[in-house]
Length: 238
Image (cartoon, rainbow, N blue to C red; front, side):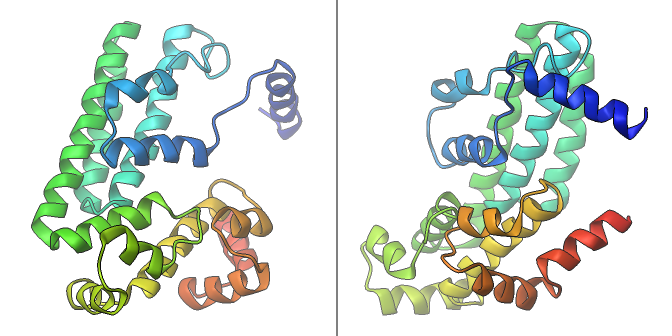
């Protein structure tokens, strides 16, 4: 298919009235589930029929494709919450293959529930194994508030701990200060948003709570090693 044909198809989809959930929206839902909200309460939001006439010629295939996209987001969100990388990706491969074996909407919905539950267990096990309860709760708070200013004082207040005591405890267990950890997580997220979601630097900066795009670009280069623009160019060369 030529680029012009692809653009015509994309415009047709846009004009049809369908709007994809943004990654921020889906990430928020998955964060909420992993953060402890009831799965069944949020399953309606993850409606497999949302793109039934967009992602494939048939309804079933479209739902399968939609679930595969969701698995990708859930896997990466679980990793952000502390799940071990290789195990999380291996599970993703397993569930993608399982999608192909389902032949009804009901089966796909059951698989969705099973998949999300499995990743939650993965996150819970890692949390219990790695850190003390205050640090575990702090990491969860940071992950759930990446799109806010997310200050260290907010976290210590949320935990009911003295800010200085919390900072010392966090660095002792994690190896870096909570402020460094917040920056690292925000910029990891920014890299994904810019490289794979095609988000502009200004939009990514604003979404992650940066008031000054220039400061965001400096932090990005310091953490990632290249500027956001260079990151996009590298990605396009592959």
